[in-house]
Image (tube, rainbow, N blue to C red; front, side, top):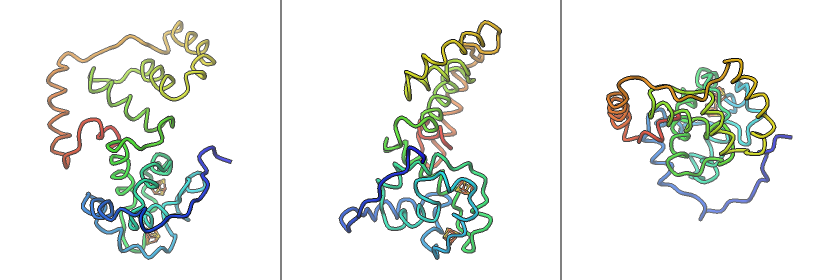
Length: 205
Ligand code: SF4
Ligand code: SF4
């Protein structure tokens, strides 16, 4: 059983946030999801749905209902591999993959993504490194990822890491491009014009 399979809880009318539904409708890719007929084709097509806490069909239904907290804290958003199979097969032409991206950005913005789950953390670590240096650094990314998700496992992997470093297969030296300031400005302008998404949230775009 996956560690993120959760116990289902009863939800009430007071748990619904209809503003959330409207906000997600107004994001790119989110316009059509309210027309979902709950046929389940997306869940049947999705190669990863068996690992998800909520299938894509459920995510669409929950977003439409306004179950904001449940949707944004879901592991499903981060397990989605962006293969677009669901979007291709959906009989209502709903852009489910784009909706997943919009929900990911929103979960980072609201800070209610699964905190110790590697994928959202890695997305942020990667973006911060690239924003700072103009390029990523695998060694630094790995260290930060372990520290923020599972520091104990870093100790277990320390020997492997040191071996890789000694053989020149892994570097922890911060390498940077020449014009970091210009790159930062470029990135800020791109992300600012991207529907008001701040740089941090754009890590997952
Ligand atoms: S395939 Fe489309 S219509 Fe069917 S459940 Fe998924 S999102 Fe809804
Ligand atoms: S895009 Fe994501 S949700 Fe859709 S089928 Fe692929 S993995 Fe599943």
